Length: 248
Image (tube, rainbow, N blue to C red; front, side):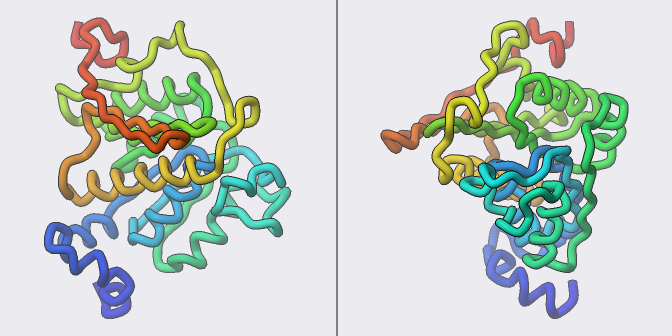
């Protein structure tokens, strides 16, 4: 690290549990963020600010006026622009020293598999179950940790599925592909700070995972009810019959 980097990241380097080693681990890391909406916005901004050396952003959508209430990485002048390009411009204002790659189209499973195989961690900031299940399968195949979050109305949840660990459940252990109910913010609404809270926790858990800091949410599901300001944590166990991660 040079002197400018030492100054930029000094407040987190001061943490005794983190230090120079933790910062170097972030600088050496490559994180894939899928979805640059309400969740992906704070994830990308905090990972960039914290000094994750390389971010790959995936989203095929464009910025719309209705996005700006919660997708804080985008600005009014970005309306009509590809979300990945809008995000890249604003992330470079936060930290010009990191590498940002943009993918502005839907990825077929083969391309997604190749991409996930090249990164250190995957952040799922998408808003639909088919995509989440596909990301989970590919993360399991490539033994990559998956940081998953979701928020709708005034509720949210976060978990880590660390596919490198044999005892870690996967996303499919939590949800049955045949029994999921598709709900989106566009249909059900969401209060803007909710996605900020969940996305910030995803960013924190990603940093902890990359720097081996503290205890992550692997094997746990953190759930919040913003309306009543209640939090609870549930233990998750592998489903012995899971079609993705079961050893049967």
